[in-house]
View 1 (cartoon, helix red, strand yellow):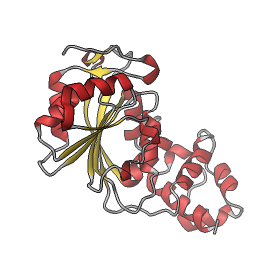
View 2 (cartoon, one colour):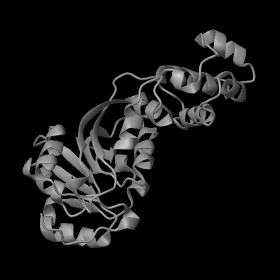
View 3 (spheres, rainbow, N blue to C red):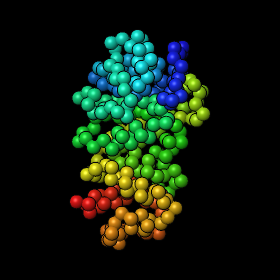
View 4 (cartoon, rainbow, N blue to C red):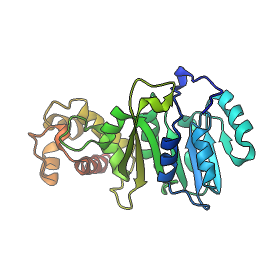
Length: 265
């Protein structure tokens, strides 16, 4: 694939060029003629081309780089709807009334910020059908990490709150231009039908931050920081205070956050 644009390091640009990988990524979304698709950071349009071959009802693109926006317009004309903006400043739920299939080869320097922003979006409805997102493998490992593992932490807990997460495939650095110094992993996120509702998702971030800022300490210390009468919480949730933060399940953190919210009314 010929590139007409040099990647900007400041924007974390690495363009996916492997056609076989691109085809696999597009297939994961199960795009139908009635589907509305959102692509984050379309770059030079390599993935865009294959998304359009599925003939979705609409394809929206968020692309920050103005030069790439012009290139995409020239290449695809009226087949796409471009939002020339930083994805962190876009309210995705206002783009379209349809639920979106979201694709993103996310800039590695802001990938966790983007994911956290979407998860902590407290709108009453899901604006997406699913996310198909590329991450640095190290970040993907943290998202997928299970309780009691060294990678388990805040990102694991937040990601698995409202979403079912599935690893699709690892992608070699040689599939990109310029070639990144790290391996990549493609993940698919699907909204859960049932999850513990919180009044404000930011409270989950607060609770997990307090625990994992001292992950080597036993959980008694962060519990004392969060609750004046932590003993009651320990008794109610049947917590073992000899455990460390990485030993608690994600579900336990959601329950602790629920208790934290109830005491702050």
